[in-house]
Length: 631
Image (tube, rainbow, N blue to C red; front, side):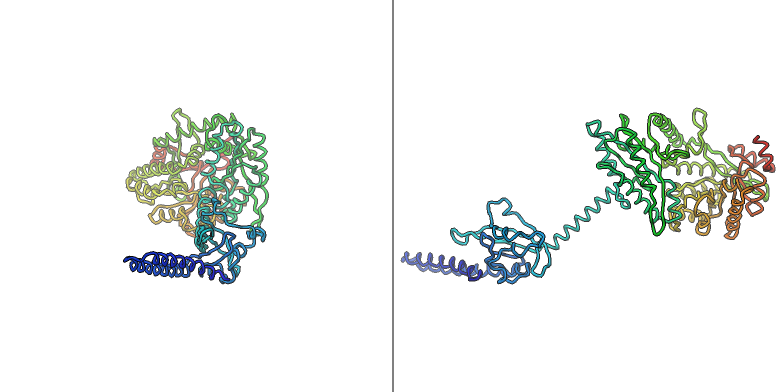
């Protein structure tokens, strides 16, 4: 007999019971209420018939699958929706257990397990909502969700009703949401290029190690890794090659890392690696040596073998180290030592270095205070026009005269400014000093321009143009009296006309400010920049000028640069002039603006004004005079 027949028998049996009860009630009663009772029985039968029709309509038209099973899980009846979900006809599944045909092969129970299965209503999981991967008759996989309940169609007989649905789309959306969340979490805690932890995640994990109670457990050795000459690779091979090297460094660090070590890309070409449990420099030095060896291995990229080197600062935590930031600062200071000329590439942060760091820290704090109080001073070095013998312009150079009377060299305190991201503040102070002196010279009747150095940080500053324009207005200066000198190395790497620096240079030029590329000739792509950047001129680096008389290669390079400038209509200026021979060679090849100790050393404001007011002709010493004077 089919399951449908069984179901109908169970339903008819229930209706028959109702009729018998009604008939018995009618027979026992022969009073005036018999008619009312008969009407009530008729209405009850009609209601039962209507309810049966409703139940049948609901079961056959429901979108959810309905399955009627015995306690051994054999299917007695299923509605059309369940058959559609599973892909089987009703007569193909009657009498079978769903476990026989609904599970994909990798999770399908054995025939013995299917045979032994029975429902257990007392199991705490029986009434839970279940979700499993299933498979249709045609092999299509989907996600199946179902709930189940026990019913008693007649006394002593238990059945299980299962309500099911296809939730594949819902599961796919949930999985996609989980993937999105995982991607966001990874983005929030990892570097996209290398896959290493980012700074935030690294600091959190390392701080957790440093907070442990066990002294050995909270011991941490740290490596601060910085690639050497990485910008040169970006410039000569492109950013894609640079990215390949950064991934190579990350792989090198991973290959050396022990279980529990923490690695991070700090940004740019800087990496850190924390080694919990390391308590001595010997072990830390061994790890640093291994990292360097791996980094120095050649990398194949687009049929080219790329190589790179690195410097590493290493540090151990002690009582003075409370946070990961403290440990990073110590290793960073050691890295600064490791990158000094002649250093072996790895430097440790020890007691001696600590004492020097404290001195440096005090100097940096003093410098910041001086900068905030506008206490930097400036020297001014004139630029000679060789055609007229007159001073044509001057360059403003920052100086720091400390309160104790000592003068710190510019490379020291400008290094502080760069490390503290305060170069823009130094540049803004230089702009004010330049505008003030240029305005006074103009008031005295001298057509003199003032030049100031412009760092990449200042170019990127959102208020740079506005503040420069304000200084020009306040000093009643035409824009062409304020010249911006930009380091050519600002444009290391692939040049793009929409870069911030290039856009700012174009805006400066549009507003009437001359722009010179400073230290020209020491970069890797200087000549290419001449045709792309909207500049007024270039400033030949002193290293080329120093050798132009006796070095044929230097002469060829300088001659080519000056010839190209002439063809492009770009002005040229040479710094580092020491001798008349250098000046003669440069003027012979069209470079008439000259600057250097052979013309005049940097001087204070009053001295420059006096020099210009006096108007004495400038005599550049010959090489022989220079040699005799130095002897």
